[in-house]
Length: 106
Length: 120
Image (tube, rainbow over all chains, first blue to last red; front, side):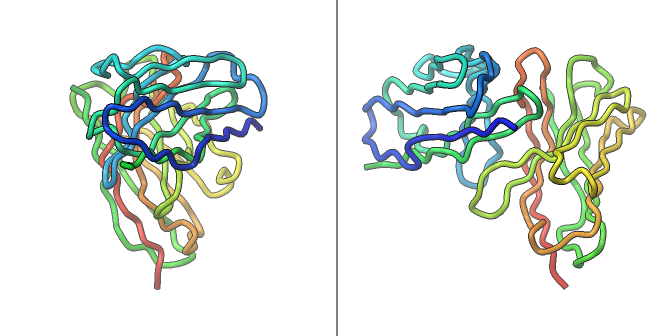
């Protein structure tokens, strides 16, 4: 089974800074990787699918890259509403999520 | 705009069966290209996929839960349901229903989630 790891566990940044989140798969998932944002008390929201495609309505400051086993979610300039937990998800055999990265305010 | 809404008991006794229903509005559950899914989140933890169903009735389950899970669909009511048997305190979680879009290989619409507590 494919396991996803995310780093760092917590990222402390200030509004306006650039955030770089990593997701690594234990074996290749091709480009079949998605990213989600979850705020407290809310359901996750799909941000990125197929590693680099923004979902409908997602601002351009969110971008995804990578293929195979190494993936990155970049938030170019953090807005106050971007402080949340971010999960990656693969679907090579069955859907599995990474443990998450919390982006909090420094 | 597709909307999903979970319903069901918020408290289940140990060893009993957890039953939840997800009602889909704004779109037909019989539309091809989607799997209708259940995902759970233990308090303060990450996301765990439980399983999903196609409108035709084909099901796929998380191997770690497969022996206890049944997902069914009622296209006439535009609903799908989850049954999880022999529950323990470890099944206490927020349960989400969600739509998995095959084209994107991701979950694009989610319900708000419902907390189910397993306790006597």
